[in-house]
Image 1 (cartoon, rainbow, N blue to C red):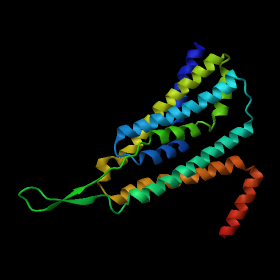
Image 2 (image 1 turned 180 degrees about the vertical axis):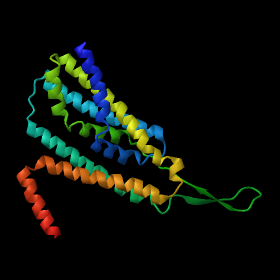
Image 3 (image 1 turned 45 degrees about the horizontal axis):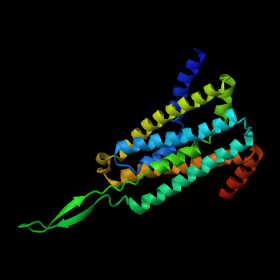
Image 4 (image 1 turned 90 degrees about the vertical axis):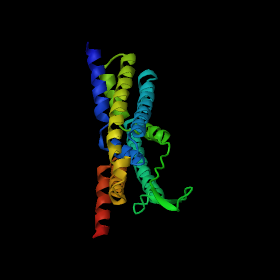
Amino acid sequence: MPLVFFLLYALYVGFVHAFEPDHLLAVSNIVSRRSRILPAVKDGLFWGLGHTSTIFLVGVLMVLCQVNIQREIFSYFEAAVGLMLMIVAVCRIYVFFRDERPDTPFHKHEHEHAGENEHVHAHIHFHESHLHKTSYGIGIVHGLAGSGALILLVMTQIPSAAGCLLYLMIFGLGSMIGMAISAGLFSIPFSRKFLLSGGVWRAALVLLPTLLCFAYGCYTIYTNLFTEEEADAISRVFFAGMI
């Protein structure tokens, strides 16, 4: 019975884990390129699959292979996630200004039909890249964040190796469900119906999460690569320069 309880709890914790700020910021920058909800939901599933792949792999190394990963290593993993968030944000801004001009949400084509004069039709084109691989890759990197603490906690609660790995798999299933739901919800403002309302609204919805994603990435690197003393010194220098 205790094992069943922990496994059900793993599903719940994995589901809630998907709604953490860094996860939501990353997925919002992916699904903002979608104009349909279903592909966005698939992006969320692939993110969760990548996230689960990393956690399960680290779990195999720590539980089955008895590999002792130092705590400092996981700080570098967290910093890598921060760098990934910054890269995702920069790439999203680049794609937005390259392909999604906010001042030109549609363009016109001239058509000439038999027996009729030439006239103009307005069309809106939605260029949707196949982002599933990108989502999977982001999920793989995201799985590095907090994986060590999670696995160590599971190892202290579940003595058997099989039970630990089963817990991690169900935790991953919960994160896939949670991320699929959050990705679908985040994609709603970018659906065709909302896109027709104008480019300024879309620009705000794209750029605000992107800037937050970049800032959160900087914060993650800042808190994981520097000690408190180093962080305080950098802060003093930074704010002194602003003044």
